Length: 73
Image 1: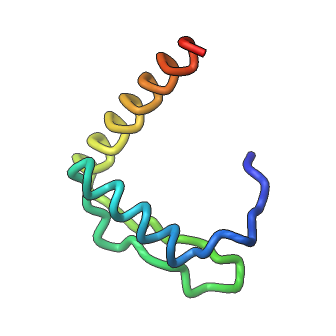
Image 2 (image 1 turned 90 degrees about the vertical axis):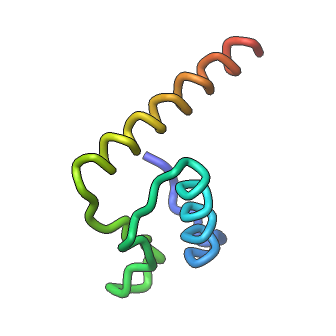
């Protein structure tokens, strides 16, 4: 589990994530800051099953690419 990093602006992180998802052709309509507290959480929202599958495929492709680049080191 990643350590908490309070120096990262949740608003900037949300926009960076939204931009990356857009480049991947994925839209999470409910993506936004969580209003529930001071933890700086980002609400990814609910998505249709087809969007979840597209997201999983994109993550797998990115993970596979990182394995290739790590192997080159």
